[in-house]
Image 1: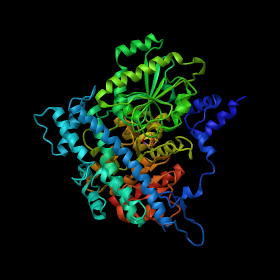
Image 2 (image 1 turned 45 degrees about the vertical axis):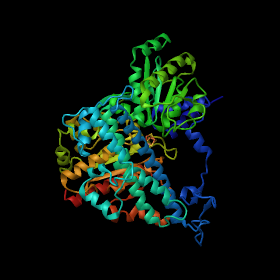
Image 3 (image 1 turned 135 degrees about the horizontal axis):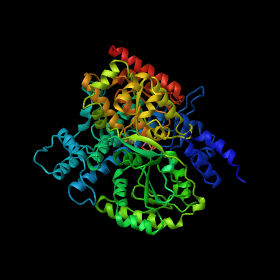
Length: 629
Ligand code: BF8
């Protein structure tokens, strides 16, 4: 028989959050395999792979170099460890940049379809932002209909992906000094698709064999994501669905309802999830749910599409990356609706142990065992209603004896877009700059990224955030890092009591938490814009500001792109999970040290979040000293 006390002990080593632990024990009782079990089954992981020295790029391989032998070995083509590590890293980073940017393109395409009147159920919700972005693109706004402006803007944004223009407009949001660094280094991104395609070309055998040259292109590709694809995803989503404003909401697995039809929205792109929210308000569907014996329809977000819904609509958030199997193990999920990115291929296997239906919606992301309902903006509302209907019809199959839902959701505050932060400060960054100059706030750190079984779920995010706010360092967050801190109760104004006295006084005066939720992973672009606007106000570069970045639990290729555009933009960034670069001391040295002399920022690798806080605080103090404050 299953020993639940042993299960509890295991759960405590795997996850920080009590609600997660509770359902993890249930998943063990139910005999469900989760990410932690599969990770354990992979041990010991390949040492060569961990060092980044495996090359499986061509049919002469697979090859690997012997990093610790007396005589360094080379792959069949002659690639040494430096080249293999750099090519692998650029490959991963490019996958991440492409993923963010392809998501961005889809939102822009939905904006175009909306402007042209053939997107069903969508509208231009934020005209102010539409006008602001259109003006940046030199598009006339006065006296024109919003659809006309949106159409012209969408076409201009799509042009940023192409190769004719050779310039990404949004890079001009960066301060001049930062842009000058990019120009000098030849890493100013030309277009989103071009950098991605060129990266793929360079890593083909026999093209770029210089690790430094490859890593410079890695920065250029990452910049095309941060100041291009991701930034467009954020801005086009704001224009279509509204720019987030501060709002209260609930978070953790207790947001799953005992008596309503539960639909989990998992993935990244709000063009799907936002339409499901709209469809869920349909009186006919609510009646259908009640006729099926439920009290209504409960939507719960997961991962970054959950963050999008939370930021704009206050929809409850069930959890992060590592909660996707646990949420199904509550036994109360009628449908998990997904688009793409960060979806375990195993979700259909987990769902198969309960009555849950997994619904895939993108032709780019199908999973065997799922029901596929292709989602297109042209028929968005109809498809959303069809998916909800499918979930309602599945309610009757729920087995109450197999349901367990934790008792208490956590309160949180989200919605801190760059615009909302500026507004909370009274329309200008001056109060924030004054607080930094006065030392009430020493600086700010962006904590971003995922969960990874190499570290207890949420421990890295939460410990680092607590440690930083204690030291009067403001924390801004996105992605699963923000979800972790939400579950831990750090995203409420009362959490200011855990902050140092300076930060606490500022938070209390403004009624804000010491850890600000700025959105999904593409919304790391909001952090860039925030930093850029403050730097421009002070007439300095981003690298002069007392800022830092951290990804304590990252797993994804997208996180490599984010970390790299942070660094290339001048933000010192600490990684909690070591990247696969240690097979090349030269690559490691370049990223961790030499970059400092090139872009005035570098990477550090520190798995211990307390020591990571020490590194970030030291960096912030260095920057403060250099600014004379
Ligand atoms: O884009 S933080 S696990 S869900 S990659 Fe994925 Fe990482 Fe979560 Fe969002 Ni971002």
